[in-house]
Image (cartoon, rainbow, N blue to C red; front, side, top):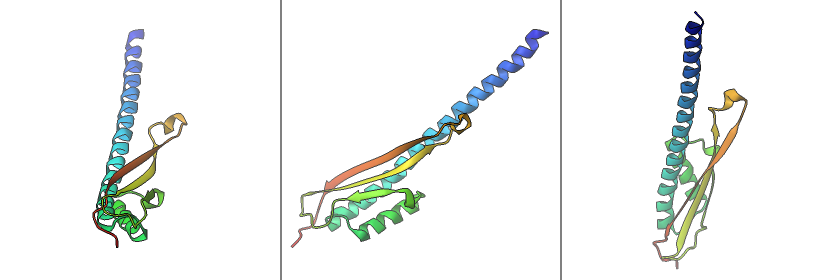
Length: 129
């Protein structure tokens, strides 16, 4: 009779372990999706920066619109770029970062925040006179 109760306990522990693994998988997918969305916003903004030879306030607004369309929380994003007045053929660069909180370890009374950082560069395309 004792073996019967042990099987139920083992099944419950197995379900707990599988649930924890499932939640960690969801966090990994969330981290990856957030990084992909931030990369898309940076890529679109970099294309704009290459045409306009740099980064300024209007470019930042465009970046925030791209990020908002991607579904990112724009108030948490830190973004910077090469200021305008870059000459054709010179490098323009954009750097963006957003914090990501790992939620799967909250039941263990732990918190973990990871930073997602994206850095992209390209060449300016227009001559500045």
